[in-house]
Image 1 (cartoon, helix red, strand yellow):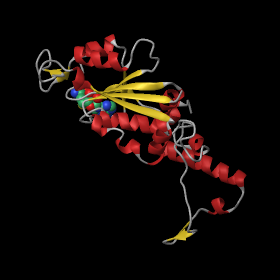
Image 2: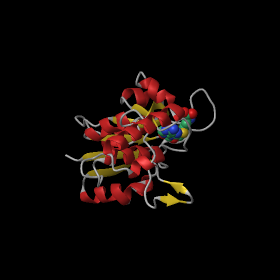
Image 3: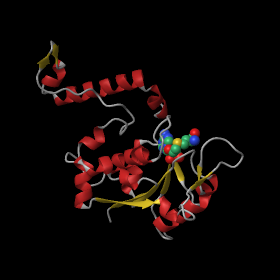
Length: 230
Ligand code: SAH
């Protein structure tokens, strides 16, 4: 069974979007993963197919209704569907490479994209939605966040990346940022490639990369080292 993504959104035309080209797009065509969108408005109420309403307690903006969203979720993810149900949300747990890998190892994901001020808390609780954030900033909707999450997942699926080896050495895979890269020409605008990389000594090269990786991580992301207990 290949990875199956179902995205609940008010803007299905945003999908597959960037995921329809390059690696992810070719993998989609091959059937290495599948993508289905569900238009939340199809479950809207009344002649105008209303999906939102004013916030209880007052305040600005609109809130996605629990009853409408629940109907869409129940349609997209019937009993027995083992895929995790995610809600893209700035209040969620920040997405990590570890969670991305778990998702890629699983059957797929049902992804709810919020809009407006967000969604009624009761549907989050009642349908066990896992809130996932892609960073500490506010998007106008969950769709770009869902595209980001799926991009990160799809490149890890078997057969998607041409060079399988590159996956394991990437930033975050070993809890560190990746070392710098260089390619031809050997000198550019007076800047040479570090000698060690031209030495052909694989042991030394590996040690240099490791040391660069640790240095960069210490300088830029000391929090990652703390997470590893270093
Ligand atoms: N009022 C909310 C923000 C709503 S933004 C708050 O202050 O927390 C509208 C929708 O965009 C959200 O429901 C969510 O689905 C999506 N979104 C915005 N920022 C996001 C982020 N950093 N990560 C994931 N989803 C995000």
